Image 1 (cartoon, rainbow, N blue to C red):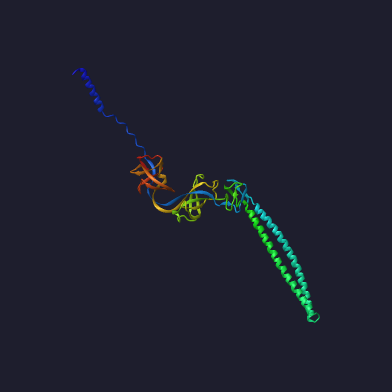
Image 2 (cartoon, rainbow, N blue to C red):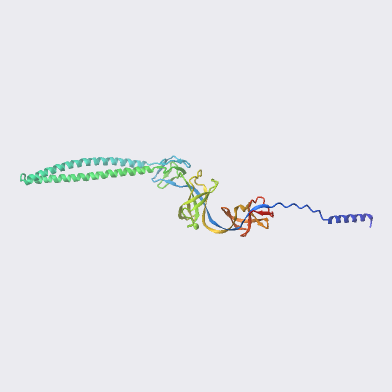
Length: 384
């Protein structure tokens, strides 16, 4: 073997020895001091069974103004969103035929009034004639009893008296008929005036126009919707509840209302139950009154109502022990003086508790605060 080959073999041997040598160890980092935390056990709690229903914000009183007569729309003085006052004219319909009927009724009333006046005069004349005939009859009868007048004179006086009395009765009947005609004519005027009033639709209360459903020039039939108006005042939520929940919500029950425009939930109270079920949606309406100090919300706004249907025992964890991160919820379980990170699945929150669906067992201790400094495996000191 040549010297050059020996040198190569020696170099390879040195490299092999160097590769077998162990690397130097890094210095061990000191362990962080323990974090002081409070704990709470995972346990069963009496929690509410909640039902959430979608709803719409409405005024307490909403009216659909319709036409009671047939006529073309002459004028509409408001549009959607306009404020209205009680008694304010809103819609005017053409009513030429009704106005003509009213004029005829007034003419008939005047004619009946004149006829009544003539009947009253005729009655006064008949009463005067009857009194004179009665006086003459009584005088002739006295003379006839004294044999001072003949039988013929007595019979003539008696016939005149009976005829005058009959004329008086006829005059009284004519007056009663004339009085009835006056009353009938007055009623016809009232009916025509009422019908004419139907052609002028006024606001039933103070509030706001929600919707205008007809335009000037359109023909309005009886029952045609013209305007939808809402009374000013407190608001309510009309929630749509599935028919399977019928009988579980009662008058006066509390309800939590969430409205995005409001920014925070408010408490309401069930004020009305529409127990008939809509055949298309298979649901019924529950109306929930809102507090009177709720302002600035627009009718038609989406709302969500939450009702307490019952209570039951559920496994739960303290709400302040849960640390959400992305789509995951985590807690720190305290075991052997250390915090152990645990992924859990939780349901809805109710007050200070969250319903536990999976990830923990009853009786396990979880850290409830402060937990900002906790890391998986870090030592802890449990506060009493």
